[in-house]
Length: 250
Image 1 (cartoon, rainbow, N blue to C red):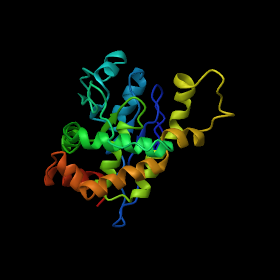
Image 2: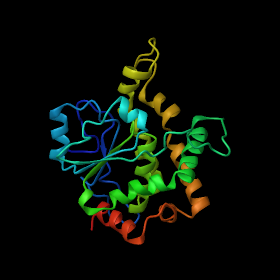
Image 3: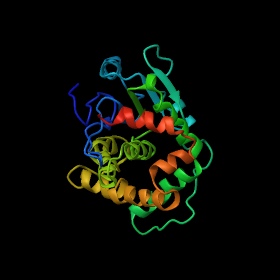
Image 4: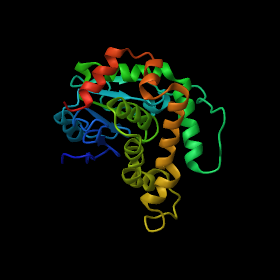
């Protein structure tokens, strides 16, 4: 497996390391600490071993119960890593945005993400608390596509590390490059092909950087920033510092 931002893991899409991003104080995020991904249900033994060889000690599954039952995580019950099912959105109706501007996908996506942040604080805080435990790291966390739920957790981690907001938005939007193949395999209408629908097209409708920027505007306006928000989820100063110290190179 080649070392870098995108980890080419057979059987999984959109597996990316959060290392190597600049922070506002001139440092950068540390590699092999937090890894984001799409569903891991299709990993064969060689791919599982590749992730463990990469250093992964904890797997956090953010999916709903039915998703985890329909496509079980291969690490559930593993003796080699610790598996957590931390259902970020719950199994009932998804949190509804108070005001959704349907003009443009970025507005709709940002409104949905903001509602999740507001209404699922205990679940989000639980995931961050797990990632704050030194013995849990390096850790990989995932949802179905590694874009929405996973994107929110990634944004919060990078925000704690002091990564600038535009870089956080770029990391979010990068999912388009690594989910296009999944789109054609699992979601696209039969007449679609890479010649008439590119990763840039996918990004515009599914993960535009403006959606993340608008979500961060919500966090700043309502909570005063990412750190005050994660405190509102229940994280202590010690847990926040544990994540920051782990993720930012000294």
